[in-house]
Image 1: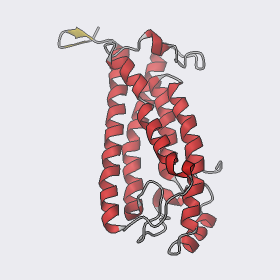
Image 2: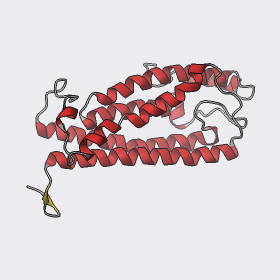
Image 3: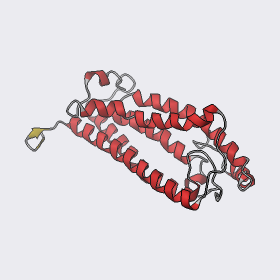
Length: 227
């Protein structure tokens, strides 16, 4: 048996501690990166030149932002209020019915998924480093340019791709289907938002022609060879 400060900590509690810690660290790090780069983009990229005019276009960003915040909350509330153990009500969302694994294999699978989730901190940093002064939630900037390097040479919206994989990693790390509800919201909101964003880019006098050329070279929006 393992003890910390005289308290017995089971293997499952250690995994819950790791998963909860990586969840919080990932969320806080990405929010911090986003805020820092938005300030920089406001200074260097100039004002936003166009925004969606439809109601759905205006609310789609808040919808997926709320889903992003809400996605980990049930898990964190469950384990933090129950001594780093999943309570019975949360275990009802378990993936056990979908994946038959022994306890040890399941714990290691969750550890790997939580580390994959943590790795999105550096992936996000790489994306915003390349995006630079263009960064905004939906609209093009007056000094903006078409970005076609880094992950933007593979898919046109890598931040959204990362968010989808984050939700998938979360489901495995939490060993719960509840984050997949957030994944469905992400797919729907990103699918619509991408169409709006690309229309704004194509209609932009400064970048429209370059963006159309970029679309010819980078065919996929979110996932290579799929969409």
